Image 1 (cartoon, helix red, strand yellow):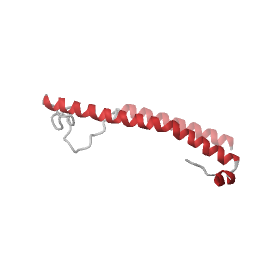
Image 2: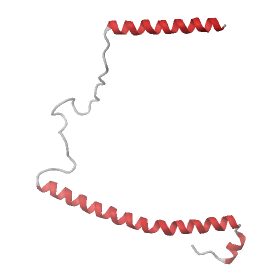
Image 3: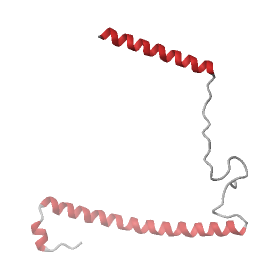
Image 4: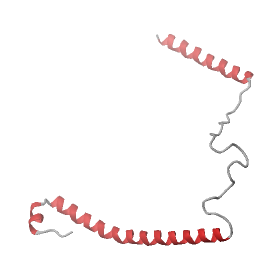
Length: 113
């Protein structure tokens, strides 16, 4: 980022300071980006080695876990949501309690006027 003399003269002090700060940040980020690329390349190499080893012992890297359809639901079908079941008596108690709460609320609102 080379700044010519005219550009520097036209910039305000704030803009010039922002440009200098941006240049400093770029100089700090570049080495980190290079390091990140090296790490990603090394990780890719390791993954290839892992895949090769798994293939040699008869396992596939992409097929881990229990095969679909062996147990449980059939593949492609959504799982049923298993909710909690309430007995009729428990449900009646809840309904009665809610009715009492609403009655008390309405009574309070009526008293406020």
